Image 1 (tube, rainbow, N blue to C red):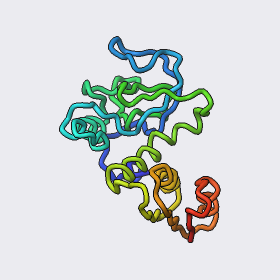
Image 2: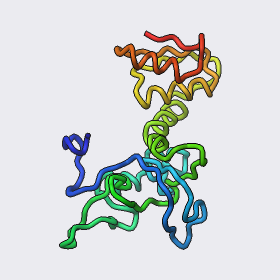
Image 3: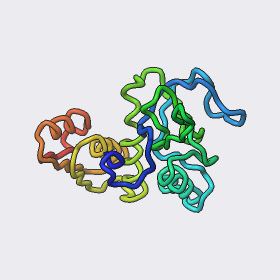
Length: 197
């Protein structure tokens, strides 16, 4: 929505789609993490792996990703994999997942267990990874802490799951929609550990 509403500057024309799961069709000659036929989920941010942020474990703010893709809609070779019939380049928002196929740097591709449906896995690449970055790198959640999660959408629900996994003592889920709070309670499995309101 940010790109559509022009709230972030992004080149047009563009193919959007930053939550991707699917089956690998082909790989580059140096790719060893996955093989054709593998079921995968892709991360919204595609870290190159060796900028100053990646080197310090902060792949979520990879300079190369933001300079190439987020600002110019390109992969790391400076090109896009989409074009119009007249040859005009079409920018890629992240990997351009709203297409029938897309090209993704191998560092952003992760194998998916067979029991996880592809249509449910796509959300992992954005909301879950966003929540993980917030819980681990920003909040640095630890066992025994008390956590307040404001808004229980996809990211908030993921933070609740992660807070429980990190061993927090209490989790307060805050939202104005009772249905979302009921879902948070249902999905969290935290029992008396989760307080909603």
